[in-house]
Length: 364
Image (cartoon, rainbow, N blue to C red; front, side, top):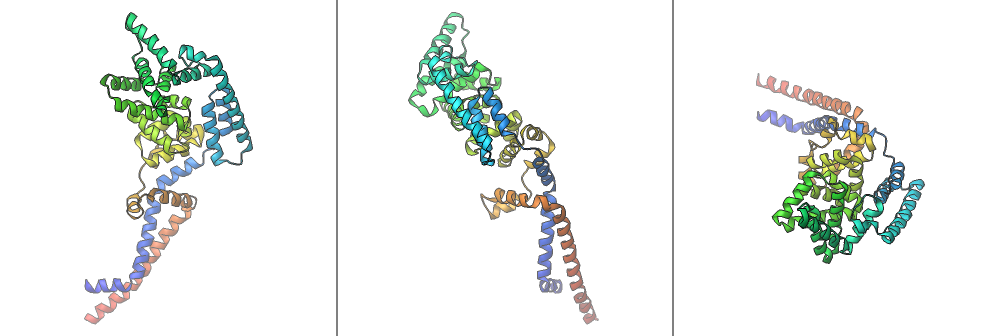
């Protein structure tokens, strides 16, 4: 045993090369399913930012149109046509804002059936008038037949209280508009009602902060539609963190919708990166998120534990960059690594065999 160890030590560099070759084979083979999934996603056609911006602008959804155009310009800074569309959208949006403030149709009814009325309803809430209006309307219903909207009534009270805290004053207005426009799930409404009935002010404040954060990062309209993707304050907090920490987060959820929200709910940082990558492929990318390949990409990389031990905080970025470089060349790198491992094994066996034979002769 001691003699064998000595022989291995004399062949240490060959043994070390064999270990490196075997590690390369393992790393390339272990990442094969994820590599095929990444290549499948990469082969999908890119998202048409210009067409989506024009469609949103035609619908009067200016905040989301600006968000999509800005995201597109981050990856296509030389796209003059998209830049022109963005400038036109901003100019048209500002014109509609002035008209909405002049007519104030939404401020009178508090309903968001159109762009103008939605803007008016939110604008009125900023000046407390809208909250007082809702208190009078819903309070009167409660007194007459007990059929008021409990959620709108309470959010109006919250809106008056948060007037002294402008940083979250968006939230109650957006929540009320989302409720009236049907952009809030039943589960989320039930969750908010439970919070209100329990008098859980810190939890309600967290909800308001999350909604306000989304509105500031994206737009009030986008924040209202994001509520359709959440069923609980925890879901909302997860979405808010995603949008606030990723410049393309709001765009990604705008494109992928419920499918993206489901991936976000069940995955970590890898899931966030996947949602953004899929969103840049449009409808085909959204469909990709529902398939088995997406589940492969949300699993931790087999080497992540080792990498984290060496490069804390940067392991996932390092592995992602390496994968980007390796993926197109893996078709020949894996066979080459396997051939290298076999060659090193043969050389090591050939070197050890004469030494072993000589040791046996000396014993005889």
